Image (cartoon, rainbow, N blue to C red; front, side, top):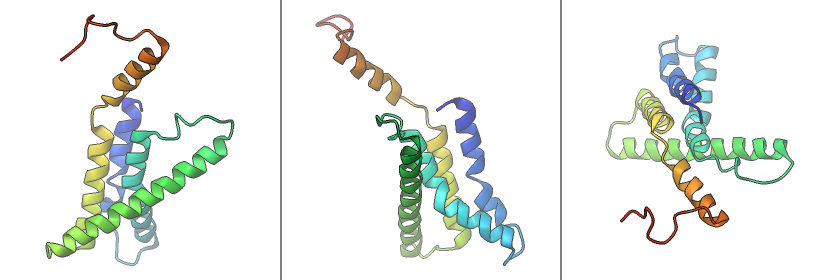
Length: 139
């Protein structure tokens, strides 16, 4: 994922908490918070992991659909986990849950990516261009 896309995703993570400043019961507030809870943490994780990018096949609609379902599933799992932790700590509040989701999304979106080098190294090893015995091997 490019740096600009990662920065944009990090900014989008804070739409939900920002929407809490709108009047209670406002349609825009409800829509923004619902969208944030259902997509923000999952989008950051799924785009970061990019499981569908490596999937072979000529079906881009199927890949997008699977990515969307995975995004919502990861977001809901995170919402349940964060909500339970906040409840057990006696600190649950909707604002705190949204802030936790935004913080997770921001951290995941901005975390430096080291996975690409490992993936390239694995591809080089399979193609026979990897590190040869004793040449440049790290301990």
